[in-house]
Length: 545
Image: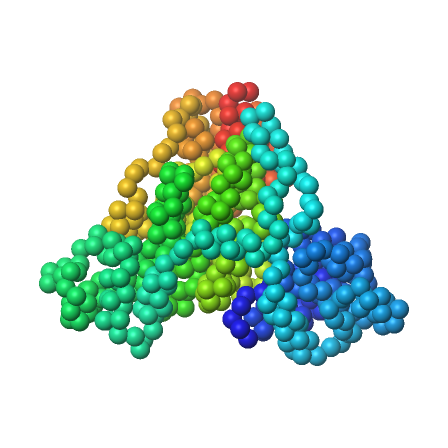
């Protein structure tokens, strides 16, 4: 195994076949997604990059033969393999004639089959190829609007090689920061080695200089004893955290085409890293180092694409402003064919970043509801990293219209033993103040009206209340003053039972999508995940009723 990260799409309507293939692929370190028929598979391939597609032939809706033919026609296709119980010689000859990479018949030796598929993937990935799932001749119109004039065609990014080269130029991540992070977790490394690297990296050294290192430690002392004191005084783990933060922040500081925007991305990245430190303590911290780094790196894919394609990003900003229901992340994926974090994974492979970082990063673009469909091991990794990202965004504030409001349910928080969320968020804020990373107060827009605020399920910390002020309302306690609107926080509340009654015409209900029908009679329902812009739009429409 070469340490590279690959993704497979398994297409089969039989659950047992899907499970057997998944077990074999994941044992080889290949992450899996699933589809039950050809229609679902094509939808996934159009929106996500896969290295291999393994399909059955006999399935409902679009059958496997048609799916294989469609994939084989694509100029930059994945490896295509057929795993079937249909032993028709004519079909076999036809598939092989058209270029299918392999055909196996159920039952099969899954370990040998997957090992062979991995070799094929690795041979194919040695040559220039594209992870862009759109056909290169695509002429897809982006929604136009009088206030927004994005390009009528998608960007001409014809191959993954071109993408990666341009992003590599845009993202000169500090190799020293990466080396420091590895050394602090290596028990055989010496403090002097770490200290010498710290002195060589200005971005990390600047963070160290901001901290109170205590008496007797001279950061200007180049001797071995002076270097060792720096490491022992600050602590190896703390230096690892600083290195990880510097890895992200150096890019965000050195390239600043959109000052406020990049500054916010920097703060969010640093806060995500601190969240990992707060959430994961003791032995748990050592086992989650990759998850923590993935949380810090989450926004770097966006920054890199922004630097490589400034014209497209100007259009994206206008596009999401003109359509408040569309998130910035959704627009990015439609324009580039994959999410920024997925594209960043492709970049990081070339730098031999370990799989423990690539795995959570490759699923970082998914919402919490989407993560629920992953197998348990991958879901837990993805959720942990996303929780760090979410906490960082909450702490930093400055929510933008195109930001996605995607909050963890109480079940997710309990599953990962994050109980005292309010205390954790305060601890993250405190660390940010020590690093002087949050050097300006969040820019909360002026409130245009008070809103009666009702929270149905009062368990745990109220994350939604941290975001709603960015919709231009001031939340007030129920019954404390006359208001033209009532906002009901129905997150983790399956039904309206026990909730105070209010006028439907002046009520906005915010709940998870699975509970939306239960709340439909109580007001204008906004189900999350949704954008800050859409929340604002629905609230303002209700205020004007």
